[in-house]
Length: 579
Image (cartoon, rainbow, N blue to C red; front, side, top):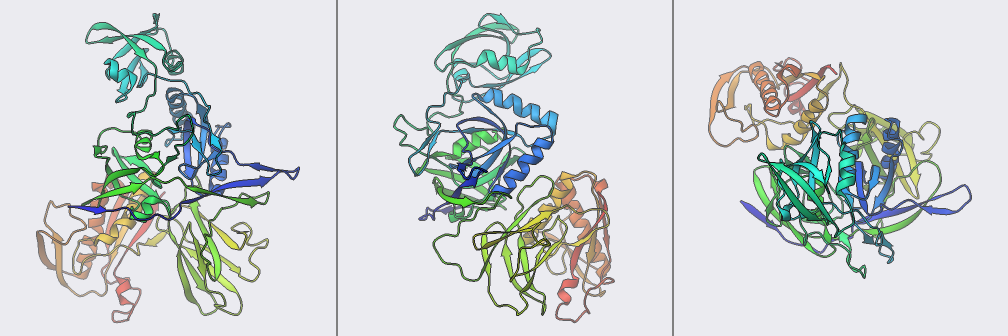
């Protein structure tokens, strides 16, 4: 079933340009990303996190790491090199993966663009042109691993698997040549000709190729013309590629995709009718398919759960706002919009302690004087809580995102920033910015999966359980040293019906279709539920030796069986055995 979502009038996508004060009292603009090819190690919507991650990468030995703001996408790009060619950037990206362990390094192409004030960035930047291939040196021979569709080599008949033995009459096979040296010979001025000799099916073949653009497509990727009238825009998402499928990892609030209802976890199947799932396409190629002239549209088809959706998205370039920032600790920059927000304003910044990756989640705001919850607010957006919630001004902020240790930050709203709170609390204008540095669970931790639910009397998971189980799955994949025990609990110890999936079924989250019904104790039900989660994790690639499963029935209840909160007795807990 395909559900169609049509264009809405879009809210402005607001991103920021920043300034900092120098010791001489002058203002300098934080760098914009110049056009070129970059070996990128991280992308951040929050300035502070980009600064921290840059320092982190430098400590790994990549001392030349910098970051810059790229308005067409609306993010800070942390990068370890800027190159005039894709091949050179790719070589350095591979080098960084091997040398520094930066496994997520990829190649990003920044196009020329025009700022809202009319300034052109990079309109006069000249980049070397290639011939539209990817290659690697194997057994002292340069082998073509991919031919870019529509590129110069594709037009002249170069094929994947071809071995390049000569470039412009120079032998490059069996001479100890490196990938950077091959790149230097292949790249050159756009429009110039290169002659290569390839070895294919036992025969040598000479091919003449005119150097040019190396994008997979020519017409889809919009470039600025000589007048600079065209502006490159995106659709306001971040994504990664796993199992040869592009998955949305973040939807930018207020952007084109958010306005139409795209969600993290959506899998991109097609772009403008072209199948991209399962085709070996890379992140740079997808980025260029999604990007285009501001105001143009792109049609993407996504898979969400078992349904396919089609979105017609209007590309839009972010609006850039200028704000003055005090020197010192890097700030989080927040768009407060035109609408007045009442109450005490907050921005909750949740991120990984080790790599500064921004983690979505919610923060519980507590009045400790009663105690009671005041609010439950999203991280990474401007939020507010009502004023005058108590006389003392004391407030507790609790961050409990599954997969990470619980964090509690306490302070007084009347005197928020002091020596005790400054490590996690700062202020920008009238907004309190609260940092939560998230750490993974460690051995001995026992945590409840508050958002994992089962159908009544069944060992079948409800669909809303997927998100938290996905967090558990990612945690186990991230660290293969983790060993966990899954603990199942019920409300009471009475026997009753037990409904299970049909044997051999993998419909872990569906109560439809064939099922089998039996009878058993509450402990048996809790055991089967724990084992079901274990089976699901194994089906997703987790080593069975990392997981144990056990059920306690109602033996470890939190509340009395008939208490109004007794439903919380039915739960799943995770015990960390090894980390």
